[in-house]
Length: 55
Image (tube, rainbow, N blue to C red):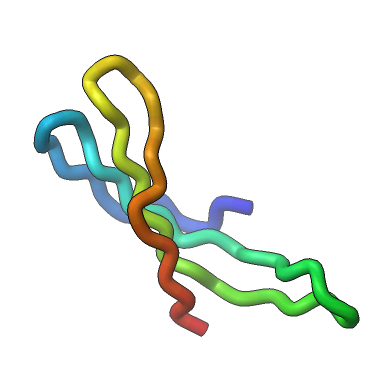
């Protein structure tokens, strides 16, 4: 679930920063807020170089 779209940076493609709710499949399930960096390549493919828990 996307909570906040924060920024974009044009490099060799585009870097996007999104804050999302992460639900871990555990018993009981655990929820976190994470900062996810997405890199969109020039040909439109996405790579996730980093996911960082902030809560």
